[in-house]
Image 1: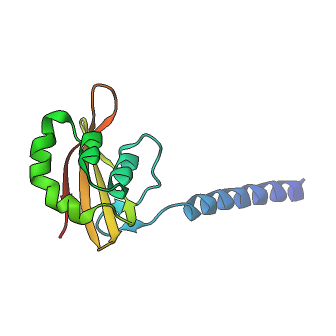
Image 2: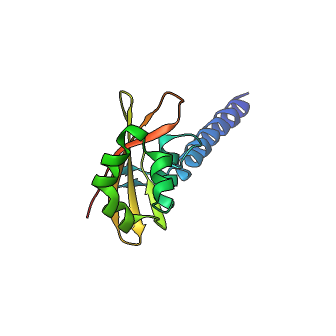
Length: 138
């Protein structure tokens, strides 16, 4: 009976250890500037950030991501920055920080040059993500 109990408890310990190791092996790194790197989930603000960064900047880009009420000011403010930045080739996306109805998504761009930044998104009336602002380190 004692041998059966020892085998039972040792198998539980091995199962627990294997579960912990499996969970740790899939954890993405923590980036010094953007925090926890995430694997983007479909429909998330993180996914929208990745799509926006990997797309070429154009009027179609502005129409697709920026709400109509902000487009003129957005282009005036960010046009030269986005022309020089987009599309990026290598990017890591950090975990979004939710602030009421705003989602701040940090990112790190590695190509064409290293930069970090944040995109601020909010869902519109239709439930689609719209870009309100962004910051990028120079």
